[in-house]
Length: 595
Image 1 (cartoon, helix red, strand yellow):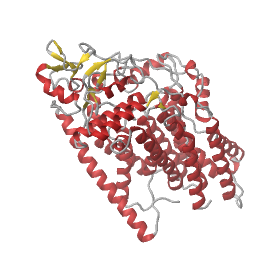
Image 2 (cartoon, rainbow, N blue to C red; image 1 turned 135 degrees about the vertical axis):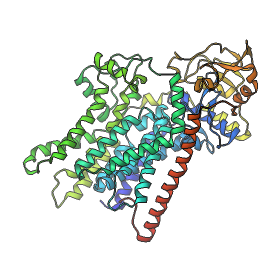
Image 3 (cartoon, rainbow, N blue to C red; image 1 turned 45 degrees about the vertical axis):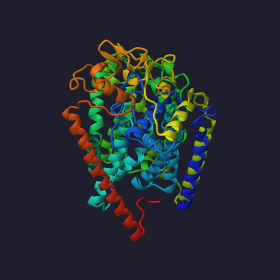
Image 4 (cartoon, rainbow, N blue to C red; image 1 turned 90 degrees about the vertical axis):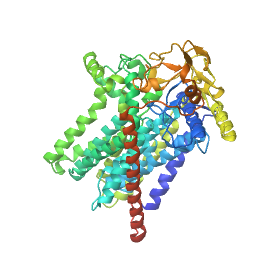
């Protein structure tokens, strides 16, 4: 396959992708997925803050929901993100659309480069990897349903590629690669992809082992991975310390951990979700589930293509085992490690009462309500293995390139057809109406004036439109804030009540002091406490999306400073590396990635 043909096929694949999915963003009825009921008002609140204060100050708190709540420290808030940055110059709907397109393109290019450069694959295999990744159901349907933070998943192939060394890498190249990969990982954290980072790191480890099996063991990718983790912690230190402070006051340990009781049933459901479509009756098979796991929670599809290629590879490998040299002891150890890691997502979603109690007792797992998202670890792994299989099938030597190209083109058609035939009525019928936030944004942008919070309101319970109350100057009492429980089980409501926020309730105002949720000891209060009458000026600034004075502990001030310094240093190294690579390309005509 020529370079121009590869580019044409990738371009055509991307166009087909956009034709299929952009009509759902928004739908014909002007609606979006239900979880945009949280993200759209959050984008508007972030824009209000920027209008009032510029971009130099962090929005620690927001009055827009629950009578006041932490904003920057909320793990679900993606303030430092592309969509929030785009809202400065375009509407929230347009920002979401651009984010969806840009990150899908990054995923496509990253998957192509991962195979072509990282695994030295044919162009046909790289094009197939690009198509498989851009159409993966986890990225597409999570964004459609409103899990906007998950757009960061598209950076996975690029991050993994940056961990794989090239021959003759200079010190600057190594540092630049680590820095760029750390920026990818830290972006995922900043946008709120908290529950997806562990399975993504699991997938990264598996792919590094696959690379070692194919090309020999090297320590450098693993050292790079450790360095990336360390730099990412520095970059995210400010947000991480704030999040941990908030989570300490709102532990998410109140829900049981669901799972699938039968191993055969578990394997069947996972295979269906990966290779066919989201199982329609999957929730009925869950045990110990308090909440239904709706269709979007089962979207991990990479089409039937990888299953067919992997099956063909297994069959030919068995039939030609006598012609194949035996695996070395090192390869056998690597293979055992790969299999062990591949089993992990299955074990985490297998329900057995004793095993479930063990999981629920562990620090990370005790705070989640489902471990289905660990299945996303299979997406990049299955894609890499399938594309390696395409290259390593026993094609006739004189026709290998042509046959690989033909099979790859056929697979592209299968991917497109399978996605076109998938019923998407569930997403076309989603209820969140975009118009109210769009109109409020347009008014604020035209006038430069934000709508302050005037009252605590209840617009009809916890609906998908509940948080839109901020548009008319209301902070929703029955708000949608997942950190306090899906039914606000941990929300310290009292003494908050319906009425104006400047109304006196004894010695306090009718407005929560959000600093008490975050740093209660330092601010001499308890989580859920209100602004006192003496803090009326601070409360007035807060309701107008302006900063107010509060006490931060020393650890938070140090962590914020560390993040700022780390960001400056990391960006400087990455820019120097990019400049050097660009200069080398101009002088020597070399491309940074194989085409």
